[in-house]
Image 1 (cartoon, rainbow, N blue to C red):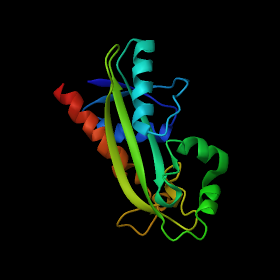
Image 2: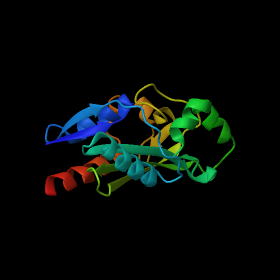
Image 3: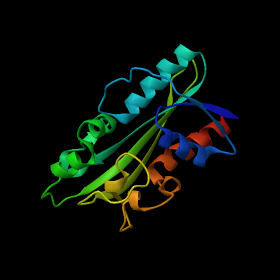
Image 4: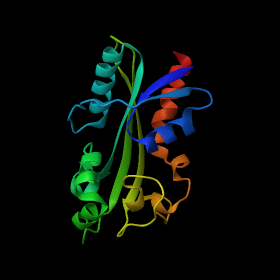
Length: 182
């Protein structure tokens, strides 16, 4: 079995392959497309998968994920990638300066769609806290400031953190179960 995973993010591709292979082969499609703008990652993944499956005339998988910070009313959320490019980790930490409630969650929505069908969306979540500084160089994105629940280190400080991330694993494991049973 094979899926067509559309992403520019090599970190996401690596994580998807760690979770799905060898049972499900991950064919990478590096395609430029206009992503729908919405504050709900499920809506972004669903619409993107439906549009791209029709455009390519094949079943596709799309992932949208984000960092949701409680004290910032869920910001940056579905706009995490854009915000990361604009203000980076120092900007997020500046917004959190002096904030006591540092709880947050990583969320991932994985959508699978066949041409002309409605997308199936699978959601994963991992709770954690925002560190007070940038720590480590492993992973990607917000990993150097995300401390997973029950851990003292950020993902950025954990070598091989790609295999530990629960939020993406949850979503892709649900996708795997769906594909193997449908």
